[in-house]
Image (cartoon, rainbow, N blue to C red):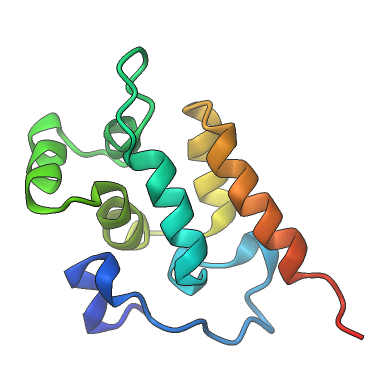
Length: 128
């Protein structure tokens, strides 16, 4: 369940939670460490003029109208974080990295998928 602090956006991402039952691509977006979220958001916030496969198209894929996406952009200098941590995280039967990767694949955002893949690979390595 999401805490009350998620409504405020990325400035209040909760600390990393235990991942024993929440590993790899099954990890919920709200349990991904802030530096990883930050890197994904940094990439998605860069407006792409040619294809708009940035936070705007992510918003469309999440079912938002153009006016809602514009409103988010006007209220936040980190619109992709709002989209990921509030809109994506609250979608029924969604919110995991698996679900996010399927959206990012549609958007051809392999750069963001690479950030996720690297984190998952590092997260699941056995510690000696």
